Amino acid sequence: MKPFSAPLIRLLPLLLAAICLSPFGTAFAQDEPFIFEKNVMIPMRDGTQLAANIFLPKGAEKFPVILLRTPYGKGHENRKEFRTYASEGYVTVVQDCRGRGDSKGEWEPFRYDAEDGFDTQEWIGAQPWCNGSIGTTGNSYVGWTQWASAPNASKYLKAMSPTVPFSNAYDLAYIDGAFQWSALMNWGSKMGGAQLSGMKDQQAFRHLPLNDYDANLDHEVSYLEDWIEHPVFDDYWKQRGIGREAYDDITVPILNIGGWYDIFAKATLEMSNGVRHESRDRAARRNQFVVMGPWRHGIGRSMEGGLDFGEEAALNIAQIKRKWFDYWLKEKETGVQDWPAFQIFVMGENKWRGESEWPLARTQYTPFYLHSAGSANSLKGDGALSAIQPDDAEKSDTFVYDPSDPVPTAGGNILSGAPVGPHDQTQVEQRDDVLVYTSEPLKEGLEVTGPVKAIIYAATTAKDTDFTAKLVDVHPDGKAYNICDGIIRARWRNSRTERDWIEPGKTHRYEIDLWVTSNLFKPGHRIRVEISSSNFPRFNRNPNTGLPFGTSDELQPATQTIFHDAAHASHILLPVIPN
Image (cartoon, rainbow, N blue to C red; front, top):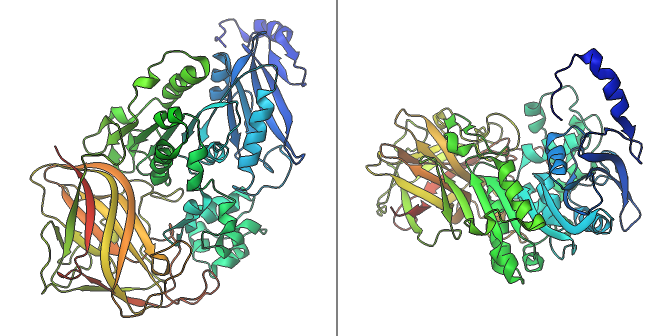
């Protein structure tokens, strides 16, 4: 609506005369380019009615549709994003997920979104105002609701644009066996309408046993206990994810948008690659696109944590999505077919670059080895990092991991808590239970773009334990910013479904997935690797007892030994991109 210049008193008669009621009983102004229909109830296959707000462009013709299915509340008629789509000739349907908002049924995260998404699309496609083309959009869980309904999708689904999405709830809950404690419990309890009873998050996060977390809340949230009871990728989780084998059944063009510091950074790339390589439809394989910026869970900003990534990082995501939908739903030529398959932001260089595949074909996977004289503990230690392989005489490093005093989370791929994203690690690196290995200042820039992993050889006095690894960019001023990190739970080091217990005192090989990144380590910067056994509260503390997961309040310290001699050459494997 254009702003009025007349005094308000002169406008009142005009405004009152312009207001009428839609057939659904919702007020709207006659000069709006759309009709707003509130709480339209859409039937699902089991008879459950889900509520949707519909922004319907005026006119007799049929229109393409933009669909969002959300558990966060479908909003109201003044939401700018929805009004804009409707003003540009898209019917916009915003639906409350089952059991949320005004929708009927029981709220069970992840459980019904595949079926409900398909049924909603079928209902939309049959409406007289739909031209037979539906596009989906939305962030985070709303990205999941899109991917959930993508395999064997409705014939009306023509394009998707998920932002910071995921496709499997298990991969959200458990990272190589470690439970993403703060994200799942914080988000899960709030979505269950529960409030902490007289304590702060940090106090609640320390509660044991894990399966009794409800004791912190003002009422029970049943699925929180379910998540703890299923640490294995079993049938429970298979019902709450599309499965990697389902990529073959996805035949729709998809634009995934994510960030290097997002909790779904790895998934954003893996999902696109899965369809690109596995879809039975040749056109779908060609039309998978990814945009990856220097962002955390909220995308599009130039500032993240303590770093300024420059004006180029502040991407206009709305404009990109508009071009995407105009091409696929309105058949307008917007240049989509000229886009690179992967548009990535190289941090440090702070530039966007187009690539045709992921990982990059020209990658040179380069090991950087851990070294020390036996005292790599903390920044004050003698840990070093270089491309030189260790010799037989190199001493190991030891530290004590005490789960009652875990290493605190400091930035990274985390949904909630402060800080988030890139953050100076030097405070964490003061701890003796953090091994610090640092290279000499780089004489030339080194670009690291792709998947990162650490291979360490370690022994422990515990029956079960965790090991963590973190890649850090050390600036000339001494500030050390996390790039990516990972964790491995010993009992799940070889499988997501079969436990493989460790023998205390025996040396085992651990491969720690640090996910993905794109970062230029500039000349004068140093590369650093941190090794420890906790990252709390992002991940739950391993109690070192080997008892069934989440059932005990017992905690035991463990002595950890990291080997880096010729026979046990612990290292980080960096995806180096040649100049």
